[in-house]
Image (cartoon, rainbow, N blue to C red; front, side, top):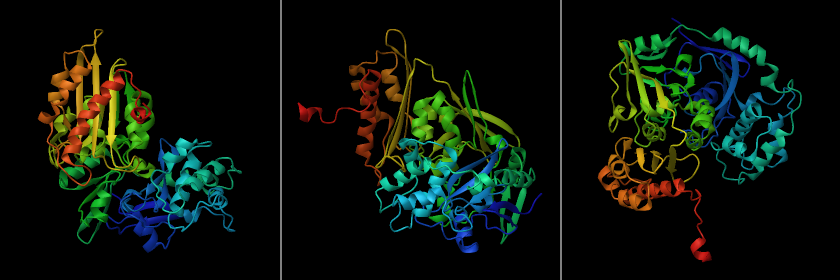
Length: 489
């Protein structure tokens, strides 16, 4: 058993044998290392002012991702390479091309958010040689600026894509082989245990060790991406003990596809799952791009979105509509159940003491089936859903509905199927008349609440209207309706 967290910070080896289980990377950087380029703007993963890169070995390949340092815990950093904005410029002060492009395009005004934008653009520069406008905008979804209007920053991204000097200039490209070797030396199958002030930080060395740890500490807080748990600390000031970190467990990060469907390890991030979902279930992939910003998608996991049981989590309605199953594991065994049965009540899931979500299985939709996913939020990017609905339907050659599953988040205490609506449509032709009649069945399925995201009346009417939209789209009406048709007439 090891007793320290070890990682690389810019070019320096770090070993920490005394770490608060919920110390954030941002506090570590600013307060203990005086690396103040990373800023605290929101402390909840929304504004991107704290953005840094974290590099890790994935199947022997070094991959860098942007993350929110404000909600990333130091305990999750073992065997990683943390890169801050201070590492980009050359020792003689020459700016990195990404930084120079921001200067040349006037992409900075007050400057507070600028280091975060630079790091997001740097992450894109490393990952894509010639990004298009849409890819640039996705990379910047998690960064907010009150000054520039974003256009100069986008132009900087386009400019730097055309400026690729020798790889020897870039600090990460120049040192890549060296960093890989150093990270390989830091990788361990030992469990890390750090104790202090009566609290414990645990980094299990394997899935088996995780099961044993949770058997001994059934009330431990499991942390994968920390996109939710991070806010428990920064906003609610919770004291968590013990904290068990699992984001390094490769056994939980596998994605596999066969003729029956997709298996996702519980530790698979949204970003990692995206390409597979884009190929296999495109509608699901489009939803992924609406979850947080790129930093959140790099950190957050689909398994975590399920395990926390939030009624407004975006992925459970989709997974339920597709008939997904969840596999739970503990030191005493493994069990699998339909995902819709996992959610019992608000804040309560069918997860026994010592159990953890190990994987999810998503059946492959039939080629002739119809699948639509609708996320309704006050702003398109980086917002929590007021409600999220998923519709999955199959029909026979005569147009009769032979299979239909409809699920919503934000409409009840748990993600929940609209069984009365399903029953009203099943076995009938999928016509305007059938849809109009089925709309009233929503009143039997859901009694939503009013909160600051939406009123109960808005949620109920919107759910009904989404059924109508699903019908129109299945019938061939364009997704974006002609808003001004009545005025033009």
